[in-house]
Structures are given as structure tokens and as C-alpha cells.
Image (cartoon, rainbow, N blue to C red; front, side):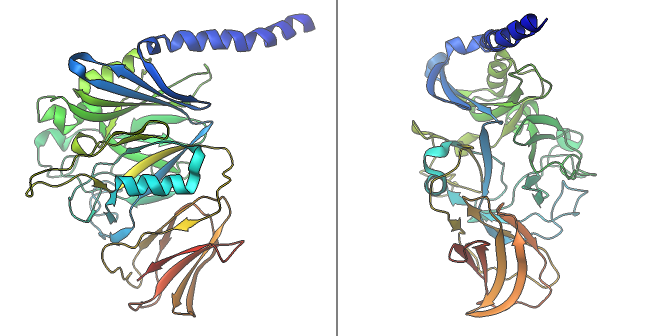
Length: 398
């Protein structure tokens, strides 16, 4: 009996490998551009000189970072899609130049960086913008969304009165896509859900519904199971240069994606960066003064290896465009980026004078919802410091 068990244990990795190769057989028509342990980037030539780029991300080996600009205005009671209309805030996040975001990401994680894409739909084309739909970042719902093209009382088009938004949820083991409930907030209101974005099922994108499914640049995401165990541990991200949403979704279906397929921000603001290939698709810069430019974006996803970073620890904060002065007894989001696992402290200063200990110790996860209990003055600043080394810090001027 032991001999049989040992033989099965020996054969299992081989059989599993064969199964994986058959599952991903459609990849034979894709050109590998970069393949590492945990992630891969492929290119596929489409008709008429068009191209598709596929990223396969293994969540057991790769980490996803949500990167947003700092908050200019909290948009209190303006959220439309989290626990009912007006039931949550919808902040204005600073639009950040794609090249600056990428450079900062590489500075934080260097050789661990694999790729970056733009993500959430956004509403305004000024220096800061509200986001279309809810996002949960490291345990905090940072926006309730404001899109007029969604299931609200008076959408801009009646088609959107009854659509179901979808939610992409992920952790360090798996990802799944499920229905989003804008009244209850499910699944974003669940404590176990730490990172998630609400967005359109690809077939509900306005480009398909209202613009006759025009060919354009799009980013679509589905999930895949690699090991046969319950739970999809792979993200499949398809970025097309010039195709319809249906064509892009069909590419994912042919790769084995069986569940829902979502779309994130695309069109002129589409961005795809890879550490080996550089900028593959960049946001367009309009030549017409009256048209908005799309090079400054509010929300990105970065993908990096989970291996320990050898880069010196850093805490980075970008000063918002406007002067921000949080109000007493009202929520404000403190956002930062860092490259270490230890905790941080958050304190309020007036020059060298400590005004308030906002949090003596909290996770270094880049987000903290602060409700000031005092009136604040212009010139105060918030300092986020490493709990272990106070010389590692970032500051936000109020």
C-alpha cells in the first residue's frame, strides 16, 4: 500500500503539469513577452494589425497594490453605490501622471515589480476626480462611487436602472467576481473582504450598450483555476489595443474563463506597463485644447512579486493639488505608500509641537480613516512614521 501511495505522490505533480498544459493550450497562439514564477505577459496578434496583451497573475505568489492619488475633498454624502444613495462619501482623488506613478512604484519595490495598469472609471477630468464605483482598499471602503451610469434612481440612461454591478474580490490565495449590492454593500461590507473593486460586467459597459460596441482600447478581467482545487487563484487580464468588448471577452473565454468577466477603465486612458517591456500602451494626449487629456489618472493596480524587498524602507505621500483641511467630527482619508510590513504611527503636528496622537500604532497598509475630534488650523501637518524607526516618515501638509 505504501508503494502505491508513494507512486501516486510521485505522479501527482506530473499529472498536474499535464493538466495545466492542456488547460492553457490556447496560449500556443500567444507570444510570451515575460514569464516569471507567479506571473506572465503574452502578446497575440489580431486581425488588421491589432494586438492583445494577456497577463496571468498567480495570487499565491504575486501581490496586488491599489494606488490612488491623495484626497482633495471628501465628497461627504455624495456616494451613490455604497449602502444606498448618499450613504457614504465619494472623495476627489488626485489624478497622477502615469509615468510618475510607475517610477514611484519601481522606487518602492525595484526588481519585484512585474506590471501596472490603470483601473477604476473616473468622473471628472480636472486635477482631481471622483471614482465611478465603490472600492475597498486594505479593509476600508474609500469611495461610494458617483457614476450616473449605474443602478440609481435617475440614471442618465434607463438601461442602467436595473443593471447589476460586479465586484472583483481578491486576497493572497484567490480571486472571484460576484454580484454587487449597492443597498447593503455586499460583498464590500464583509470584514473578510480586504480588497475589492465594483465595476461593470463587460456587456454593460456604455461603449457596448450606448456606442454600438465600438472597437477601442479596453481592459477586461476574468479568473481561472490552475490547480483543480476549489477557488480561482489566477487573474487573467486582457488588454486590447483595438477590438470590441465582445472580441476581448471571447479571447478570455477561449483561455478557459468560465465565470463573469468585468471591464475596468479603458479607451484613451488605457495604460499597460511591464517591467521588462516598459510602457506598452500609454494614455493618449489630446491635441485639441477643448478635449481632456488622459495621462493623469486616479487609480492604478500594481503587480509585484511577494519576495522580500531589499530596498531601503520608504513612506511616500504626495501633496494634494488643493489645500486640505479636514473638518472636526467628519471623516478624512489619510493615504500613503510604503514598502515594509511593520506598523506605523500617525500624529498631528503644528511645527515641532505635537497636537494629537491620531494613531499610536496601526498597520502600514496605506489607508487610515481619521475623524478629527478637534478644530484644525491651516499649517498643521500629519506625519506617518515607521513604528520601529521614526526617521522613516512621510508628511501631509494641511
